[in-house]
Length: 518
Image (cartoon, rainbow, N blue to C red; front, side, top):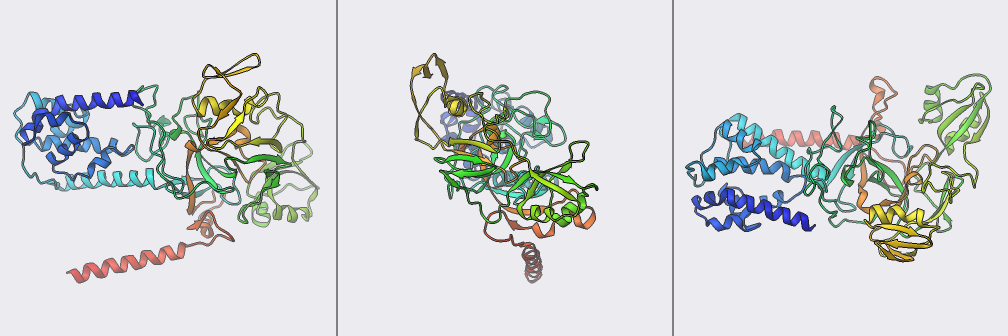
């Protein structure tokens, strides 16, 4: 934090020595160019822009768009209006103003008209401020998201397009300072990173974590969008090596918060138990498990499985006897499939209690856990204190070291945190246990452990489109899922017709309004 403040003071000084003459020529005092924050207010008055622009300038994620605008506006305030002047202001990162300040004879334009002088200028101005507005909404209010995997079927299907609310849990201020607007970790169609990290820009690339106040806390069993804690890939579909990624540029995941801070969680035969009681999911949540199914003779047809049995996850034979493995079958579908004339037997595909799966968290020989029988495990709560032992250290080592930035070491029977021997630890933030409803086909907290609150993106609230990639033509769109809410009780209700009616009414109103004005 101190380094960032020091860097900002240096930037402020660079601004002052590069613009003091311009401040003077505009009727202000030269020394005002060196006073932090106040100099920005004066600068906005020089370029004839409103004072509230200062909030945009200091808003991470948006300021990278507005700064080039200010550089250009300053040069135009001193009669530098050509395309060359504009280009030099941008490509020089504002240092073109040094030329104006020291090597030219600038003439200040009082009460400059800031309206574009041409149609091209008007288009450019409109596009810039449209991008600023869209970036603001995307960063602090609502973010679009696409469901890429089947881990939350039947609540969320592959091909669902969501709006994720940033304000429910509090919008997280962007931690990455330099990056392309409205894209995540990669620039579309390029496989190139969309941002600079601290390995490239040591001091200014990443800001400390900060979150605006939210409307609510995460409730048990809510569906949550978050950054994958162990992500080191370019994006979730492509990687050729390991990458360091800032928190807000890690891959976005969506899972259900089956365990919240302060809970003790255990998985028994695939079912979650919280504080000793079986977790009761909302009625919209439909658990699915993996099953082995032996047909009598015929192969299973994918289209029939989808249309007649609502089995949407992948399946296929796994041996020469054509035993099928279904990655996800719900309770209702299972009952119907048991009555299928071609089914010889069905067996739930689970691992026995005590069988150690080396892929599950904490990936330690002392824990004989698997996806079906897991825990019990305490989910850390902010300011809660637990006893740290060599036995439970594997569970909380990543939390203490990676998520809460401590140095931890073991010397014999002694545990040292930041060089101090201790047997207790106080957690700095809340943590969550996030799992998919498709228990046999979900990479979730059973694989990587706890999800810190600073990794939380927001709350999915609305499905605005749903595409079935296996269908063709008009059936490709799942019309019954369009404009439906994510949470709630009962069968999701579509508001698509309401939306269409609203658009029609608005267009009629706009037409009549313009007609009567004439």
